[in-house]
Amino acid sequence: MIKQTEPNYYKRLLLLAMPIVLQQIISVSLNLVDNIMIGKLGPLPLAAVGSANQVFGIYSMILFGLFSGAAVPLAQYFGVRDFKSIRGIVGMDVILCLVMGIPTVIAVVVAAPEVISFFADDPQVIALGTQYIRITALTYLTVGVSYAIAFNSRSVQSLKVPTIINVCSILTNTVLNYMMIYGHGGFSAMGVKGAALATLIARVFELTALITYLCVDKNHPFHGRIKDFTSFTMDFVKSVMKTALPVVISEGGWSLGVSLTFAAYGKISAQALAVIQVSQVLCNLCQCASFGVGNANAALIGATLGQGKGEEAYENSKKYMVIQWGLNAIMCVLILLLRRPIAVIYDFDAETTQMLMLSLGVFAFTLIPRMASYAVQSGILRAGGDTFFCMVVELVCNLGIEVALAYISVLVFKLPLHLCILVASGGNLVKAIVEYKRYLGKKWINTII
Image 1 (cartoon, rainbow, N blue to C red):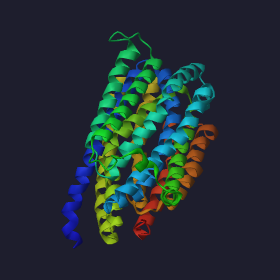
Image 2 (spheres, rainbow, N blue to C red):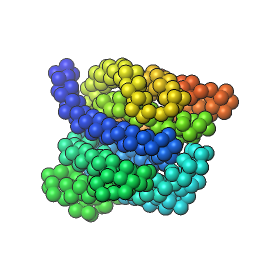
Image 3 (cartoon, rainbow, N blue to C red):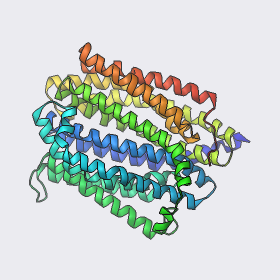
Image 4 (spheres, rainbow, N blue to C red):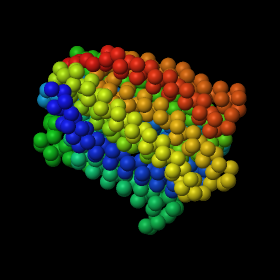
């Protein structure tokens, strides 16, 4: 019986993953273009933007955790077509992101110099980063609501229009970056400030377009009156947050770990921060397929478990893991092939270029355990509601191991950047092994609605 569902699984995975992968590729590609535009101003402006974006990274990953955790019951509700509960989850997501976002924006705007100085010591980097973050902080609220709509669209397998809107927003951001950073199309050259303003305009456009779409499309699961999204009970909130809260803590802990590691590398030099910024964007580009397939599989696994088909979910997860290992091998090769062209495009000084080449070479291999962990955790374990286990492993391995190894390698042994990256990756290796063992134990196979 399971073999009869195999072609259907691959077909559904492909159809659901394609728009997610496309969205990821376009988003990260244009982010790379934006990164190159800022990088042409020099390593210090790039380090400033990278430092400022650490705060957004923590905030957005907490939102990702909230939406990922809430998507577990949402996908299972979609499996049984319970649209009332689906709208309740979306409404709860939006309200919670506003509750978190408003004080975050105020704090970041008021304490901007102190925030940037946590990641960088260079006065010019701090000044540029402060200028950038005080503008982009205003996007935190619009991004939160947009993420709530777009992310939950994956769980109800309705991605076409949100993907198109996201692509249009990113294209708008890229064009405005070109005009505002360098002074084209009637704008004066504003440098880092221009990049921040372009981001703000594009994010407002994206949210406006998404809300308009939901108001017009009466067949969309998220179309409804305001009270449809706010009529949930506290018991409903508790039932959703039981699954979502561990994911919020997990993703928040992961992003905090990334930012603390970024700050550790900042102790090496401002150029090291610029190298990490470039490396992260290139690695994200090469990971697009893995992220897309992982998100798609989580939605399919969740819907299958919602129908009480635990054994089918496990069989499909084995097919998914084979796909992910193949994608990981391709990712490694891509980074190795692209590192020299990327170094040529940025045209840093010889020392920074050498640092970039060595770091990308290390990242090509250390990302394998990181993405193996992602494949199991986000694509399988969380889909079955095994979020508390994922949270504990994430916090121990990232905050307890990876961050500690990063600071020890930088401050105690004073290793060069590429060796610090290699040492710190030990946290991801431990995490991948522990999570894969959990996957084989099948304790994640749960129907939670």
